[in-house]
Image 1 (tube, rainbow, N blue to C red):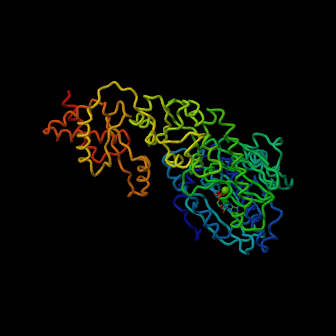
Image 2: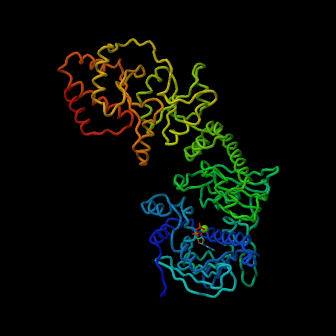
Image 3: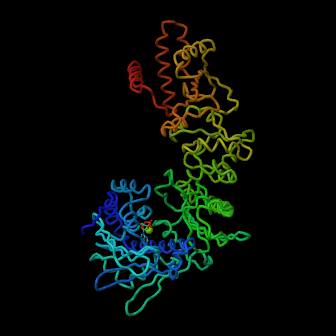
Length: 612
Ligand code: ADP
Ligand code: MG
């Protein structure tokens, strides 16, 4: 064809992946095309609300499936919004969604594609799993010209003018030789029932001379009473919403009554979605007003820290005739949001009673839920109670704040925590030594968000949340070991202060260390070293830097020997050399990078050699 256009490079790659990796699930192409047809009807229905010109076309919505066993074609037709030539080129020749290109790259590198593929906007392209040629005849509502889009799904597509009486689209699949099943009406019926039963428009099977047969139940699932819905129907609807194959971890169907009525059907997936941490990722709840689909981009519907929740909210009490933009600001939405959040929290509380079950959820979404402790002032305490943390109490099991408190002695009015990049570094952190000695539990926090929520939570059930560097517990337990004498300790501190004057703000002795000679920290109230590293990695605020504090353990034999060396002036150079090694050791235990690792290892080797 002369007017052939090439696919965007990523499309060809994606087609390749879709066709080859999803082969065993290939009947899902029908679910995808029916879902597009249903979306097209939703769009026209909504458009007609605010645009009287197209209103006459927006009626009698239905989706018609026509198998042709002679020509071996299958046609999925809708009388929805349709597409013009620009829509065709924009939507069916490119990959518009953010994150998709990245996914395609990962998948080409051998990642797990099957479970995630539906989420990437591959929807339409899945047609090429069953067809070696696809033809779309379409006309946009309110426009006169119709268009034909044709592609073999290999390198490109062609668009030409065509004739079509009414608005909407007909997607005609020229079935592959091994996809003849899809002209078999018995098989078609079962596939449609399995995947698309809950579609709100009638799905009609065109049986030719034998007439037409409506296959689906055709009512919005959430409007039915719970007792009429089977677990499979709930699951199918979830898979339709999420384009996923997993089972939902949570299904929550509720009706709020009172002066504002609304229904919610919400799900929490059992897998982590690929795009959970994309900066532009928003929740994907669909908002319906009395069964009319309005938008899945109403941000005010759910807070960001619940962005993993899938589902729908439907309310007949919201105004239908105002724009989506205006709807954002409706105070009713705020009420729906707070009510929905409360219900979700209540469900999580129930499920949290079972550790193993809740752990599955926590491993996927805990890191996101913790953002809520920081953001959601109203539900802060409830969200904190729902959080699991690693702790020094039990290396095998995570703990809650309530469990932590239950283990506290009556004098301990604080919950202690330590932050860092890596749980293993934290478990062996020098700063923990005194806490271990005194049997005081410490939470070990490794997520970036852990630097932030303790700043706003500050107390939980009368217990102050404290970084261990702020601990004011009395550490002067009875120590029987030898201790460096105060005078020479001060001399050592003076030498180090002079030596590290450009790098370390303060050097002092501490009672908190037992097995480590030194430890690196920051001045109380300043940004922790972990947070500094996070900011540096994200190239944010590189200029800010907390004052480093180097603490010495006066009971450690290494420190004791060093202090003794201060009495002979000729040992000065050696004291300085060892001090540098000690500083580097402190950095290593904290997870900091060394300014000169080569020099550090060279010196360590030198000392090891001497001792051999
Ligand atoms: P998604 O449905 O997730 O947007 P698809 O690949 O399934 O991704 O479809 C891509 C786009 O093509 C849709 O967003 C829509 O704009 C357009 N489209 C597909 N099928 C139809 C249809 N039957 N009627 C109108 N537009 C359609
Ligand atoms: Mg789609």
